[in-house]
Length: 416
Image (cartoon, rainbow, N blue to C red; front, side, top):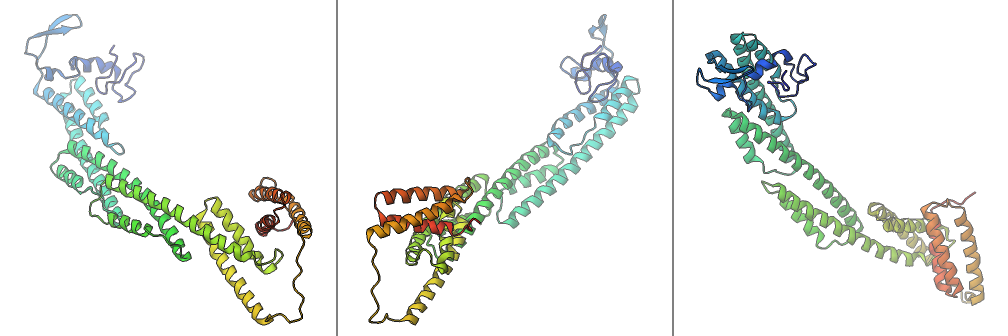
């Protein structure tokens, strides 16, 4: 028994009745193999001279010449097999006429050569028609994808490939068209993926630029970098390499924004901290501003720029409200009476005692926080810093550290 199918060349176990891939009958496989040469070509390909002896199963036998119909069957079969080789490269939806070839092989093996020829001709026409339809559908899909890219703001340099693909389709060069289609689809898919990534970078850049502009943060040359990126994307034909260069420029611009904005925010938080230090720690109207200050500092430390910008924006409003209230209070109170006693100046011992009480109070508050929370860890580190400052009699530094800790804890409710 033969070990491989003469149609699809898959192994055929001797215990099965049909090929598991194409369904060709095992009993007819020997007949199919007789029509093939040692390299898989048909007898008509080898073109032996009529009457020349060829090796048979029992010894040399004379080869009978093929009939014109049999030779035509072999020719059409070779043509179909060649087309199937490149059609399969199209992948999804590729036409397949393997069943028709099996039917023709059975008919020819049973001596119905005319019937086999009709089946092969129909299969050949069907394969050409289905291939043309598939190429047209996929070409239309490519045109739609190219138009979608243009609408989204980029012109992909794929026009030359599209024109060559269309010309090969119109010239019935199906093999050439299939190869061009597969390659063009690959390029289109990669370009679309890269373009989506670049769009994500541009959205991040625009969002950060808008927030920086709202806060009045100077960006210097960054604005010029963004304008240059936009100009490059307006080019008529952008290749994959050009898009990759633009993406690298966008990534660098985003990195510059991530460096410039935190620096400006840090400087502004320092100015606001000086303003808040003018108010006593138990000053209720300034509690919201202290909370926002601590919140913005935490966001900035964690690299959450959008949240930090939002907190600073709200902090500005609170600072402005506090300063306006303070100015109105100063106008209403006016100058202090002549006989008013001067403010009492604390001694060092009194200051140390006051700060120790405040530290113990805040330490008790810290112990009520969830142990694994981010706030608890930062507050514990702040308590340790205050302890070291008090031990070294650095009272002013300890007072400022306690003030920062109070602002940090202002955003958390007291434990009941």
